[in-house]
Image (cartoon, rainbow, N blue to C red; front, top):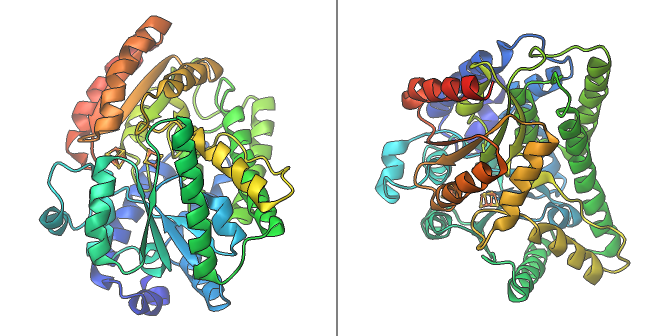
Amino acid sequence: MASEYGGMWKSLGMDLGAHDQLLAVLGQGYTDVFLSQANRPKGMDYFNFVMSEVHGLRIKEMLEAREQGEKIVGSYCVFVPEEIVRAAGATLVGLCSGADFAMEEVERVLPRNTCALIKSSFGFKLGKVCPYLESADMIVGENTCDGKKKSYEELNKLVSNLYVMDLPQTKSENARALLKAEFVRFARAVEELTGNPITVESLKKGIAITNAKRQAMHRLEALRKADPEPISGLDALLASQVSFYDAPVRFTESVNALCDELEERIKDNVAVFPEKTPRILMSGCPMAVPNWKLPWIVESSGAVIVGEESCVGERGLRNLTDDSGQDVESLMEAIVDRYFKIDCAIFTPNEDRADHIVQMAKDYKADGVIQYALNFCQPYQIEAMGLESRMEKEGIPMLRIETDYSPEDAEQLKTRVEAFVEMIG
Ligand code: SF4
Ligand code: SF4
């Protein structure tokens, strides 16, 4: 890939040597984790292709579209309203933050005990290895947890195009008003960036594109309720991860084609794991590309992952935006309503999330929940303590895992996961 796209990456100011190293590790990781799986659906070929071209073809097409005037907005959080970005004729990409890179440099600007996700976002910038970050016309940060909001003060010194969105921390009326005001301010900012006014028509179009993507993913999630499961949890997670940067209409078509195939598989009783394989619901911090460590350990320990209560999963994708409004104001209200339901652990109190995990465990017929938090992530770690007693009350076995992106604890995690799987099996 290097020779074909070297000129493009160079023009983005990337460090080609460091980037080659990253691609080599990514490629090997992908082969070991994904391509080694048995009996994958044919529809996953598309996602293999997307991953093989993740820093190549997709960037090329985004840059070509930018030459025609389509701006690129990068985001770190599922609170950034995709409908508004699309309504202004821009494209939205997730900035992944799922691997350690340039850690020595990162720890010169951030404390060591910062979560891996935040450190990763800095590593990709300082190491100059992310073409999405380097192509973005606007990078949106959001004031969620303390780690993120303070680190944006530092990120602002490294990039010239950071836009910081304030976010509420409670679900009160005042909090909703803050979210509404911030979404209106954001709409003005993307209008200014693109030069395109947001109208009823463009907003309806942005909602339709985004909802279609979510509906396709809802269909995929529903098919994972089958026992035996027609797709591995790893492959379903990959589809969620790809949803953050693929062209949305093409992505929706590909997920729907995959779902057609999975429906056939269910009819023909074709599965990736045998019937009665212990079923796990993953819950907790988002797993961005290429953070596959824990799911890989789970699925190579005799269990299947049936759902993700995560921002890269159902927390980020559930709930559609109502498109029935007839003016910009009511459509904006509908967008606020949809995002205000996201039950991220930065909210207090956040009982909705616990209820949702219990509901998901029932819906997906999970035998147990693995609650995953990154080291130093206080919101998800503290919630995990409360969740433990709630799950106990509900009679749902739960395993609490705290980890990071390094492979060092893999053996130890495998031992714990295997013991848990044996217990629930
Ligand atoms: S966990 Fe919270 S802060 Fe992180 S992406 Fe999700 S909503 Fe945003
Ligand atoms: S909510 Fe947790 S995982 Fe997410 S950025 Fe903050 S500390 Fe990191």
